[in-house]
Length: 219
Image 1 (cartoon, rainbow, N blue to C red):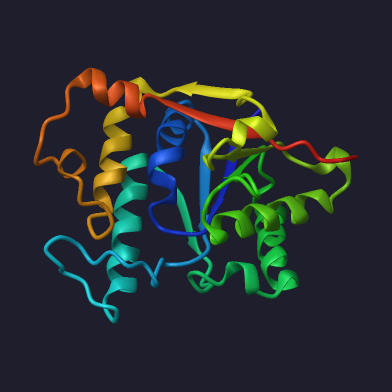
Image 2 (image 1 turned 180 degrees about the vertical axis):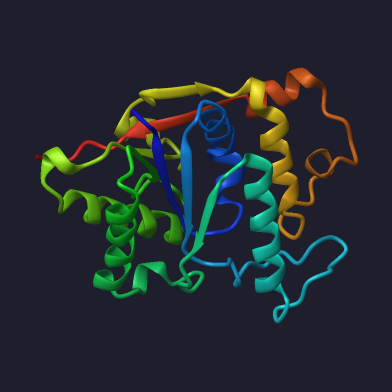
């Protein structure tokens, strides 16, 4: 069966740390990936070091960074849905859920990747995961694709247990690091920007695995 993956995340750079290696690996294996990015991250506080963006230019810069990241990963289909940064929790739920369902109907994904609602730190992350869960949960049980969630809030495993999907992405670290480095306005750590060489072991230990929780619907 052809694998079609729909990724739904709120900000440019959300794909970089948590899912880029998995996506590169799946794409190498023949998967078609659609990345629905809800916003352009236009309210981000980082402007580069030294600053090269302004509040006015940041949306356009982050759009270009997102496109570069997707090329590094190999993502074939990028959708920018035009919602407002830092307001996903306040968006009209019918509009938000409808945009996700429209993509599900169009793409017929075999897998959806998003944030785990309530365990993803940023309100936009949680609201995005909630929207995906609402949208998919409203489908008949036999029509729901599996939903793999990223979680990283403090002590999240106390509530949701250990991840049931652990992907070794060491063979795709070049894709992952290129994805991270693409977001120059947001990440200034020298080792991420290539100004300082991290030992290969440190790179593998820090970035070599990606973890997901399969969302369990009540019914």
